[in-house]
Image (cartoon, rainbow, N blue to C red; front, side):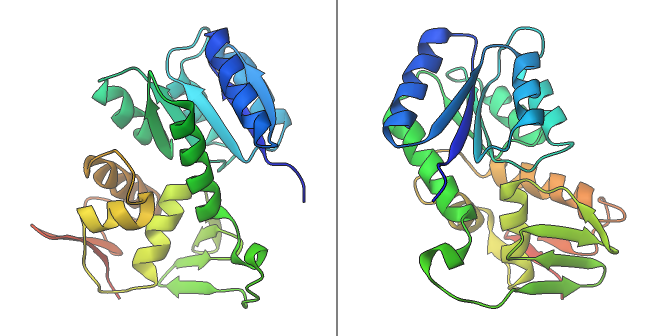
Amino acid sequence: MAKKRALVVDDEKLIVKGIRFSLEQDDMQVDCAYDGEEALEYAHNNQYDIILLDVMLPKLTGFEVCQQIREFSNVPIVMLTAKGEDMDKILGLEYGADDYITKPFNILEVKARIKAIMRRIEPKRIMGEASPAKVVEHGEVRLDCEGRRAFIAGKEIGLTAKEFELLELLMTNPDKVYSRENLLHLVWGADYPGDVRTVDVHVRRLREKIEPNPSEPQYVYTKWGVGYYFRN
């Protein structure tokens, strides 16, 4: 089996060195970048299983890098944010990040987050579960659950890993209302340290991508005071 490949982006070389050493101990291939432009060049020229991306970078910020990567790739991106900077976390999610980790962090937490993301995006067949390709359709929305691709009116749209998982959960359980807390648990995992604002940000971004008019949704509805559901 091919090694998993990660890109670590931070201008603090000691942080990069520590993360790289730890991930290589887990038999991952690791590339390193120290500014935003270098990170974009790596992301354009290579296929990664995950990108760890600091917010504060020379030349281009982590937000700008994340936003530009999202124009050509759905690779999972984990933002590294300063302690207590809630706005950084929200902005990171707005720009297309899948997760965030607050500095200073424990390298074991970083590795646990990476493994959790890998488990969620790994095709089930890797576990020896032979299952037919699953396609979910409603209206003009079509999800290829095996290929993890989404289409609107036959045209493919770019969803982040978390946006895809959120939409897949809602579409495969139409008319079932999920609380924000439940969605956070099911999509991000029980050990995710974020709050329900994460869900709201992703629902808003999802509506912007799949709804003809995001302010008057046809697919992802809000049950006021309860949560969200996909209308059948």
